[in-house]
Amino acid sequence: MTTLDVIQVVLFFVLLIALTPVLGKYMSKVFTGEKHVMLPVAGWLERLAYRFSGIDPEEGTNWKTYTFSLLVFNLAGFIFVFLIQLVQAHLPLNPAHLANVSWDSAFNTSVSFMTNTNWQGYAGETTLSYFVQMMGLTVQNFVSAATGIAVLMALIRGIAGRNAQNLGNFRTDLTRATLYVLLPLSILFAIILTGQGVVQNFKHYETVQTLQGAKQVIPMGPAASQIAIKQLGTNGGGFFNANSAHPFENPTPFSNFLEMLAILLIPAGLTYTYGKMVGSTRQGWTIFTVMLILLLAGLGISLYGEYASNAVYGHLALLEGKETRFGITNSVLWSTITTAASNGSVNAMHDSLTPLTGMIAMINLMLGEIIFGGVGAGLYGMVIFIILTVFIAGLMVGRTPEYLGKKIEAFEVQMAIIAVLAPNFIILVFTAWASVSPAGLQGLNNAGPHGFSEILYAYSSAAGNNGSAFAGLNANTVFYNLTLGLGMLVGRFGIILPVMAIAGSMVKKKITPLSSGTFRTDNGLFIGLLIAVILIVGGLTHFPALSLGPVVEHLLMNHGITF
Image (tube, rainbow, N blue to C red; front, side, top):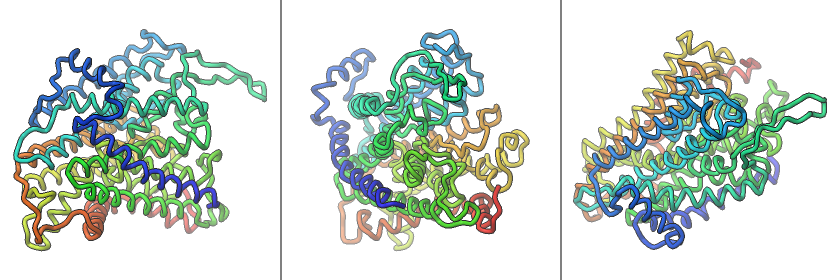
């Protein structure tokens, strides 16, 4: 690493820490109904939206009604995106005259963007029209991210509520998340990206002559608007097939830095929002610290894996698959951030990462995308592990476990276990199925442990609602489109449903005042215990699978064997 690399990494984390309370305080005002800076600007639009849809923004609902509204809304989004792909050849804004999308690919893409995964088994510039990209995918980028924030708000009200049943209103939370958080940040970010050279137009694809005299088609399109929300909403995906390695998506070192920062900006800010809304900013900073420690540990191991000397690649830093415009460090930093944050965008090919670095990316996915994670989703996933940690601590000291004054009982623990097991089931069972199935094996680009890693990564990405890929697996087949689509659904709603049930249970409970015997959840001891539970419960589950993939490949590579 060069001095400039170190400066960039340090500056990145300094800015992230500095911006966390600023954005977090603003979001707490948005969701508690206090006055904030955007209210005079867009308050009229919020009121208009409520009047148009017949919503009473003050109407409170229980967890079942809140969840039903969420499921119906997401189902409607899925159906709309699915249908417009099937008929895109007959819709406007299709200057490349792209054909209709196959049913299995349309299903996979609709599920992917509805679940905030943004897994793409297709090449954007040769598969989807401008209309589908904007009206389908970009819209889902907003509302899927807002859905994650809404679930978090319901959980916070469940934890902080005092012997009630009101978790708020899903449609109100969705509107405020979109209108006051995601939309203004995206507009600002899109303008900055356009200034950096990211394309934003409706032009036909350009045909140019290369220096060698050949003809090359250069794709155009409204990219900046989709890229802004794909990063801020931790959606991922790409307007172009090369994703953020494409010069029209990520043209400069400054755009590269800003896009990485945008990925973690809202998830980090929500930790402070959480602390404010539960009445203790120390709780928010405790969660932020756990996330930051896990992220920095993964980054350190990843950088070591890419810079460590190895005879296989001539004792040099590994440049294969990296974004040479920005350097190895920026590629590794991006791979660590995007897999930790449930984002899925890439500026380097993960298939070319060293086995050690690829393993860290997989572990980030397998832990449940809780190291910052998706907007809202990462934090409510972390609360699941907090519940398990408090429960385990209670067993150790022989005391009824409590969290923020509320008793953690059998129901909450059962729901937490379901939320942890659901995505893990998809990862392990579906990977095993694909590894022995002719339909699963036919898409492999590599043999041996590296090929196994490609399959393992794909289902980890789907179950974690991440969306990135090793890029060595042809997943645009009926088998992978359907199984990965199912994995995304379970990875999303297999966690949301238990979380909402926990919120509904917690909101009814009385708050017990703190005492000298209360197990504190805002100090260094709890940070260490929570990290241990995350690594043991979330990480060791997948150790046998990792041993068959990146671990074996790392050991073999050290002996000069590659795949």
